[in-house]
Amino acid sequence: MKVNVCPNCGSESNIKSGIINKRQRYKCKDCSYFFTVNKLGKKIDDYYVNKALQLYLEGLSYREIERILGVSHVSIINWVKKYNIKRPYNGNYHPTYKILNAVELSNYFSETKNLVGAGLVVTELGDKFMLIKWERFKE
Image 1: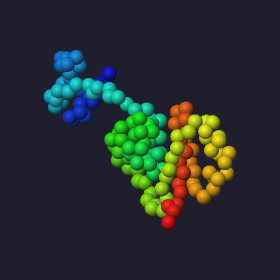
Image 2 (image 1 turned 90 degrees about the vertical axis):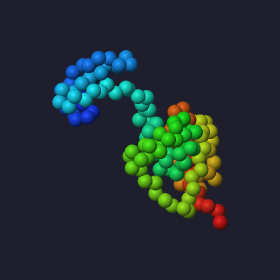
Image 3 (image 1 turned 45 degrees about the horizontal axis):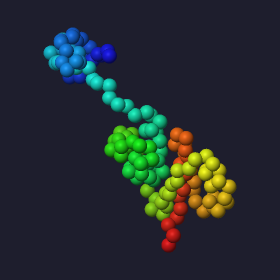
Image 4 (image 1 turned 180 degrees about the vertical axis):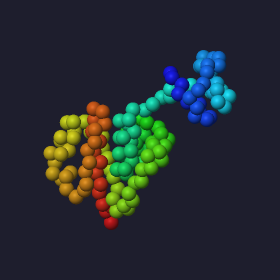
C-alpha cells in the first residue's frame, strides 16, 4: 500500500515511524502527526449497489431489498444517502414483485392476463429474474 498524503494536513512529506499492530506507522514531516495506512475494508461490488438503488427506486423497502440481494439494509440506507436518491412519491400505485427463473418467466409472459392493466419491469438477479409490477389499489 502506498501512502500519499497526511490525513491531518494533506501534506505528501512523511516518513516511516515504526510498526503498530502489524501495520506500518508514519509521521508527517510538516505537522508531526502520526498515522497508519488505512485498512482495505470489505467492498461490495458495484453491481449490487446499482441493483439495490434500482430496486429502491422501484418502490421496494430496504428490508425487501436486503432479503433479495443479501446486502444489509443499513448499507442500502447509506447508499441512498450517499448518492442522494429521491424516490418519487405516488400513492395510487404499489409494487408487487416475484422472483422467477427463465422458464417461469416465459410461462408468465405467455398468459395475456398478466400483461394487462399494470406497469411491468423485469430485472436480472444473477441466474434468476425479478418481475416488478405496479397495480392500482382496488377501491
